[in-house]
Amino acid sequence: MTINDFIPVQTTPFDKKTKIKIHLWRLINRTIFRVFPNQIKKPRIILLRLFGAQLADTVNINRKSNIELPWNLTMGHQSSIGENSWIYCLNKIQIGEKCCIGKDVYLITGSHSIESLDFKMITKPIIINDGCWVATGSYILAGVVLGRFSVIGAKSIVNKNTNDFDVVVGNPARFVKKREFKSI
Image (tube, rainbow, N blue to C red):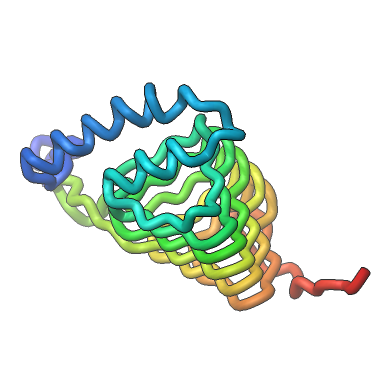
């Protein structure tokens, strides 16, 4: 192999209709979506639903979040997405009920094959089960399933599944303990 054989051009395999839909959504996401203050949630929910997102009426999505390909997003009752978070839905992203996706969190369902000369795009879904907290600045990578009530520590990079009630931290994220709820 020579350098001339290697073509790492970042292209997407989408048809023309999908590319137009992506660009239309990006325009809306960067304009109308951001106009309404965070206290007025309904317009953002309506806009996302118009583009195919499946959202409970009670979700809270920060106006400064960036959601790409929203037709691949599902969110359950009382879940939230924080400021400046990037929800990259090249594949399905399923967020369960009562999940907190913190500020500056990246949910990334796509990458490129390092074995491909033409930088082939690969995608895998992300599943975040009920009751999870993904803390500030964390990354959840393609194919990861977060078990119920998992906690992802701030600035962690998660590349493997977690079990129910796991608390993981670091880069790469490692198990530190089980989450325990104490009665008040």
